[in-house]
Image 1 (cartoon, rainbow, N blue to C red):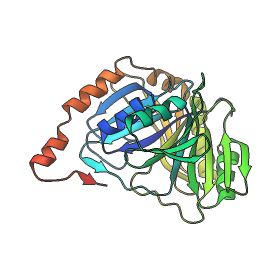
Image 2 (image 1 turned 120 degrees about the vertical axis):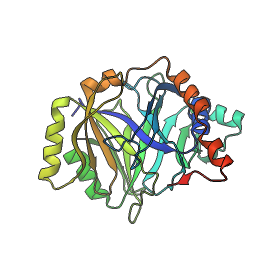
Image 3 (image 1 turned 180 degrees about the vertical axis):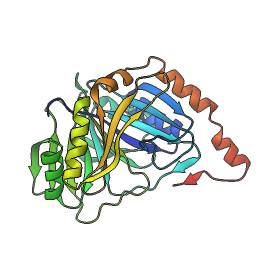
Image 4 (image 1 turned 180 degrees about the horizontal axis):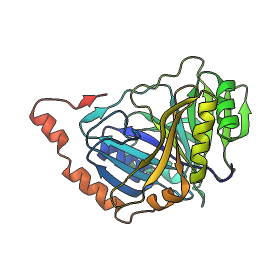
Length: 298
């Protein structure tokens, strides 16, 4: 399974300008690419919404060798309800800690050299206060599960991840496809996992010819397939193939064919400019204010 890679986590965002400030100015990430869509995604990348939306990829470097964030913004939706499914993204950067302090972005010290902050919308981020490494600073994504043994079986035995560490005390298991990649931490929440409306999705790539095998294995094991193998088009860019799964707690998992995805995920030098242009042209807040209305709360 060494050919499988952790790619990104999808966050739904209600306040795009404030979110851009957090990722660019607090964390110090770069805009890797920005795309606008007139209608909902066939694989529900933007959630269960049919209207206009945008996708912004942000990270410390290209998705070829960095774990990044996919920010999906649905025009007209101002906020989403959090659950206990996404428990945090951990990264190492003393510069991000300094940035947060300088900008007055709320930080809470949770232990020595470890701070907790929140992205707009309430998503928790843990920042290790050590020098940012030359490789990817993103260390792990933490997800809540209701049955640690069952979830570990799913991710390790069915999806082929390696168990890297486990803690009986913290009720956690750390998994990954390789030492050099962002890891997945599963944490037992001691009850049902609630996804709210803010639920995200974690994405991995694999060789394209493995996609039908993944789908067939999930059918054989009676596990949930949210979107069977489908092609997704991005105007002017590579067409990719994906299979969308759900783990035993309903966490959404995207597997995408690696060969085409490497073309699609190439860094766009105009990404920053395209995001700024889209935000400047987005008059939805003004429209709602003018009509004495509020954006929908999903």
